[in-house]
Structure formats: structure tokens, C-alpha cells
Length: 361
Image (tube, rainbow, N blue to C red; front, side, top):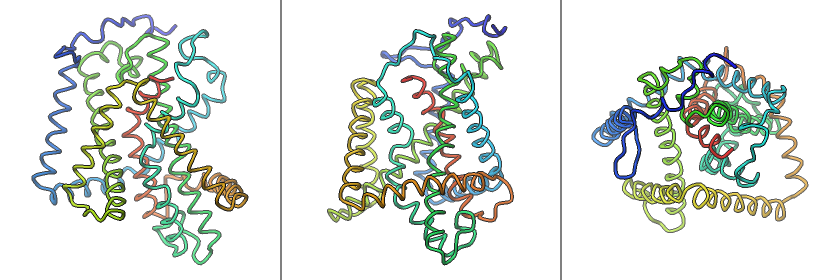
């Protein structure tokens, strides 16, 4: 056993916690997180144009300067997860040999997809491949790998390969990496299910002090703003559908009201706990997805759809190496606006989804 494992004392964690009206929180994490979040919200409300310009400039600068970093992290994490899965370590059961899962495979997959991808699959499921197809037909830096000008079949293959690339192995590897780290320390070393626990081997007991508080604040802020992106996308899409069907104008107030309704439903789901809230909604969501899949397969060109599915997977695998290249890309528009943007988004979600993955595994 490593020296750091012998020094573990679960009682070290939580000594700074406070209780208020049944809620337990750490003021050193809660207060900075709330204040920083409120500062961003108030700034955005009072100066919407200036805040939008500032955030856009920050996003553009970060993507331009750190594109190689985001891509490299995604590649390394994917290779790490594949290595763990194929090595003898992949056969080790979390929590010990006698440990059993709390949920069935269906419930587990349903909750993972509900928490890990959510509205993004609905929002981008059709729009992204169509956008990539159009840009690939035109060619240039905005198209994945420069596109396939004038070649409809080549453009189709590139569009589907790029879409699958952005939503498959790499993002799930980022989630799994964080989830595995948290699960190992929570179930095998009896540490709290907290981001700072993953840093205990590096930081020792300092993980329970101010350095650990900083880690928690950054993780919570990343989660808040990552969730805000998804909530905004979902509200915009739902509002567009409502406007199309019922003619209700998609004003800022209407979108805010829709966000409030969605947040309320989410709150009720979380308040009901995993078993009585999140699990039930996730399974309902998965059954609806299965029903839509069967409807499309049975009412459409079934054999063609199945054949296209296989062809798209092969196209993805064939372009995987080129799409994963972090340096010297000629398709800078696609690279920054899609892949690196997604990678930053997945990383912001990784603390939240990874912790949830560890909790239900």
C-alpha cells in the first residue's frame, strides 16, 4: 500500500462544514462560488452587450491559444481509458470483489446519457451533420478536414464522421476519467465523493485545506457554467418549437420563463433523489428514444439506415486519427468552432458527470 493510503483519515474531511436549516455546506467553497456566479449574472443582466462581447472575446482567445491543449488532453485521456480497459486493471471491481451495482444496466445507461449528453444530442443531432455536409460540399477551413468539394458521398462521410467524433469516445473518456478517479477513492479508500479526493495522493492532507477548497470552487464553477450552456441551448430549441407550433414570440422574457420551468422540473427531480427522481426521468427519456428509433427504422428505409449506420462508424474510425490531430490543422474554422469548443464544454461537465457516474456505479 502506498504511503499516502496509510495516512488517510476520513475524519479530516468536513471539519469546516456548517449546517443551516438542514443543509450542510463548506463556507470556504459555497460563498466564493455564489459570489462569483452572482457577479457574472449581474454583469450579464446590467450590460448584456458588453458582457456578450467580453465572453466572446475570451472564448475566441482561449480557443486560439489553447486549442492544442484541449485536443491533447482529450487524446491522452482517451488512450488512458483504453489502456485501463484492456489491462488487468480493467477487471478490478470497484468497492471490492463482493461489491454489486446499485442499478441495472438499463438504469445506469439511461442516467449516464441523461446526465452526460442530455439536450445536446437533441439540439445538435440533426443540425450538426447537416451543417458539416454543407460546409464539406463547399470546402475550405470551415469544413471538417477541409471538406470534399463537389463530392456528395465524401462530404456525407466527413459530416457523419465529424459529428460522431464530437459526441462519442473522447467526451465519454473525459467523463470516465474523472468518474474512475472519484470512484476509486470513494469506494476503495473510503474518501468523500468530492473532487478534492482525487488529488489526495498528490496533496496529502492539504487536500482538506485551502488548496482543496480552491479545487472545489473551480469544479463547481465549471459545472455551473457548463450546465448554463446546455440549459440555454435547450431553452432556445424548445422556444423555437413553441414559436413554430403556437406562434408565441421567442422574446427574452419567454425564454427566461421557459428556463425557470425547466430549472423547476430539474429541481423536483433532484429533490426526489436518484431512485424516485433522476432514475425515473432518465428511464422515461431512454424509452422515448427507443420508441423514436423503432419508428424511424420501421417507417423508413430500414436496410439503408442500418447500412448507413455501419458506413458512418467506419467513416468515423477512418478519420479518427486526422480529426484528433492537435497541430497544423488546415480546417481552423471547424477545429475551433466545433471540436475544441466541444472539448472545453465536455471538460466543464466532467466534474459533474464524473461525480454522478461514480455515485451510480
